[in-house]
Image 1: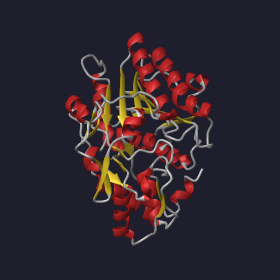
Image 2: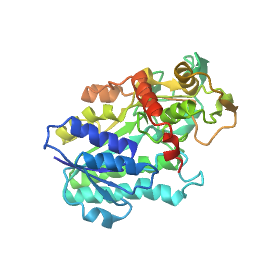
Image 3: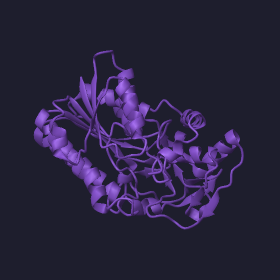
Image 4: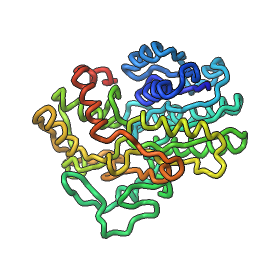
Length: 358
């Protein structure tokens, strides 16, 4: 089998590439990756992947000509994106750049799949879900973390177990979220129109060792690395208490699902969009992460900043019940497993945050 992985030198892409090789008989899988190498530290993953025999092409999926020389593959795994919910509004990248990275690149990949008859696996996000009903969720702080108040009327697709695929994707969802919703729709349209399989996996917060953590992206990694390095830290918004909650998922846990989807091929009779997440068992607030860090490395002051950021939400957990029912998929790595892995990496790489400063 031949797989093309986009964004392969990022955390998710590089982790998935190596885990797919580990899960496959020697010689049965050939992986090619493409990456624009714009992320600080991506050269480290390029070196690791090259040592595994993976061909890395320095290219940009926004440019169709960069894809033309890659040759035929059986599957495209699209992991390339500017994954920040603040993309296009924070001054670090223009709105046009955000749209081109996350939507135009996907269109070029779908044309590539059409030309070669390749299947398409889209790494999507929890950020496709509508912001107003999530921002308006009634929550209460319990043991240092928000949880939905049980005596309220929940929006369709939302329960105390989390957000299901039935939840609204009505705007606003952020520019990032909108490009992903549009990518999902186009992927399904292309697959139906041109007869190639498409699977869309909406991921919770990805986390693990080697992630280039930033406050707007890899929050689990950012928090642990920052605490260990005694960097300035803040609880932002929500009264500055750090009660906001997200679930965590290690990319390695996606591999059994991806392999099952590729083996199945024809999506007839199965939902093509599923949530994949650590669920409620993996969910942690920033304050709870702080407690974990303090037990490991000692006390460290976190400043309180009650001013909200755009698109921040108090409680977002993805309900992966549909993926479990459809594919018998459940995450294997617990939150403590993930945090321990990140902590060991932080201790072995004390300057890691400097690599992701750009």
